[in-house]
Image (cartoon, rainbow, N blue to C red; front, side):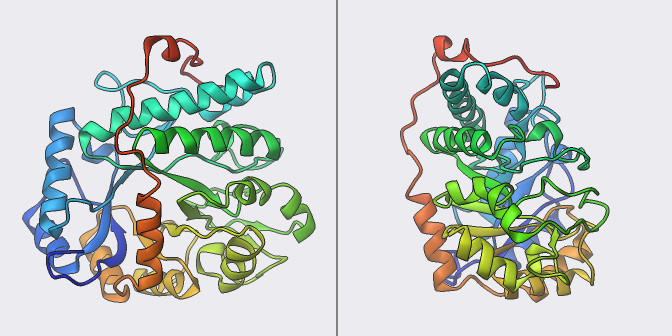
Length: 341
């Protein structure tokens, strides 16, 4: 609970730079969001990130306020050399899986443990990974080598290994982009993808890895329209997709986080976007870009977390290993090299 003893607001918010501005401090203290997310613009050095995480938690009065980052490996990693390791993209593990499945599982698990080992000392306790999307030929490359591969069974197997590795390492994983972004032919950062594939085929492919990992602690939604289920709204703001598919057919019972509300796939003003996501069934809404006016709009639209959402949050926390073991040199030796897959 926050210093006000009330539940936190159902929001994860970003900020502008490498230090906390006084305007941000006041806004966050008053709004009391569940937590925060950092991007490359917020990162300079290990000491600076540690200090920033401490300041963010201090301004909401909660030492356990989650602080997220996208540290997938490959082209999506906010912490970069020289201070941090260049981790391999997910597709590297998929390549290995096709030759040596058990070694690939071990490598994916070890890599997730190592990512957790790199994040925890900084105060970062949630990683927006792994990607469980199943890309198809002709899809936009916004997913590409961020995915483990194009076989749902492979994706589920390696996704399971990664989730277990993160939890063993004491960092919360977020499976994404539920119920699947792999068929999108446009980048949802810039436009709204519409998928016309029949539900039965989606269940066999795109939705399948998420169903296999229905016990994951957190998941992030896809800003994608699935016309066979709800032709009018993307998953993030669709009660049909969330109730019938994510909570229903997939069976996901964990904390459901929207993808970034400021992405151009969504329509309406920021307050409308936040209200729509939370009303549809997202437990928490995510706003990333640190724009003060936009944050004020989403804060005004977002309620405080209810008992059900808090229970999911706490249940997820209970899955974390509080005493992780450091990754050994022998374990690191089996990891694939970084670089494009």
